[in-house]
Amino acid sequence: MNPAPTQQSADLFQRARTVTPGGVNSPVRAFSAVGGTPRFIRSARGAWLTDVDGNDYVDLICSWGPMLLGHAHPEVQAAVAEAVARGTSYGTPTEPEVELAEEIVARTPVDTVRFVSSGTEATMSAIRLARGFTGRDLVVKFAGCYHGHVDALLAEAGSGLATLGVPGTPGVPDSATALTLVLPYHDREAVSRAFAEHGDRIACLITEAAPGNMGVVPPEPGFNEFLARTCADHGALFVSDEVMTGFRASRHGQWGLDGATEGWRPDLVTFGKVMGGGFPAAAFGGRAEVMARLAPEGPVYQAGTLSGNPVATTAGLTTLRLADDGVYEHLTKVGEVIKEAAASALSAAGVPHVVQSTGTMFSVFFTDRPVRDFAGAASQDTAAFARFFHAMLEGGVYLPPSAYEAWFLSAAHDDRAVQTVLDALPAAARAAAEGAGR
Image (cartoon, rainbow, N blue to C red; front, side):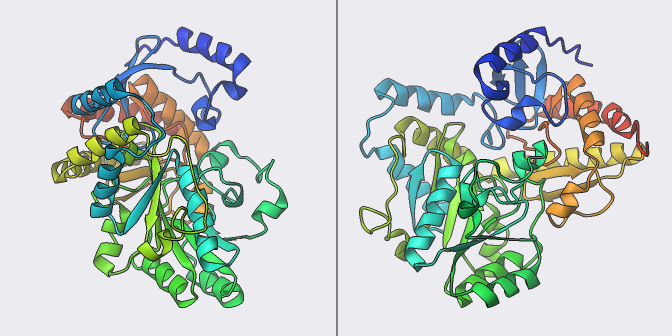
């Protein structure tokens, strides 16, 4: 067991709360959903995090997905060091951004790609482009799918909103969401009705390629194909949000698990996380005809001072070049071991649970039935998860501090890291069982 003293983290958290709202720069980090003191991390290497109190943890967050190769990968660090030595930002075109764009185009169903600095920017820009291309204004999204903190897309979003129980979207005027239609995920009838009633006004439908912001809810076979076909039938664009799944669910993202085999492709795709190699970088891309409407070729404006930053694109390019088939085979193998062990430990403790996955992404829901949509995810026992989370933390394993998030692994999760997770699971499962039925 990890002794886990937290005094220095507690002191830093107190200092942070005097200068930063809630003491954090992204809400879920505050541990509000699970209680206790958030750990301030001093360093990370491979599969491990080290906090300011000197505690080591196996990292099952991986910076919420980007660290596909593990922390402080020597080849990524070396490439970044060389890039930094040349300068950190020019405000001009650079070679690394061209090379990264070529790598993304080669691995995904997009013809061209435009870089931005965050997933929120990517989805915001994709929505603007869809509206500019179609001349329409309505956007369709699904409850529980999170597409960044874009005003129009915060309606019934998952992720931090679900974790913190935020009621609606304070600060977002009704006018910003009036043009957003929110439907239950996996509800084909609702999609068909929405397009039958509003089809000539719908600019696009946006969905997480595989939802991971309400926990991992894999799309049922043929669902994304149905969405793509429905959009095409009504002249709307199908926007697949692969900020989380891109280069993470598989070498070709979630599209590699369904679209590539079913024979369809989205009109627009958003990317982030892995493609930045741990740096602030994201992108959106799609059909050449659609992307050509962007300035300077077309009239739809989008810009960013740090877009295509040479250091960030170097990190992303190096990461993708190193992410070969062997990396994904390792992630799959390790993921199966941990999923099976988690299910076994929770079953032995009598804790209702469901383990769900898509490609190399997975999560555990504390409920007794498969989760198909946000309503199912929201019905789980979040108190049991909080007990489980803290027991895992005491056992030296850092899980996402939310029941609505995916678990992530890296190529650096070796036998020692995996064994630490396996050793922590039985006690955590028993902790989760405490208080059940009260």
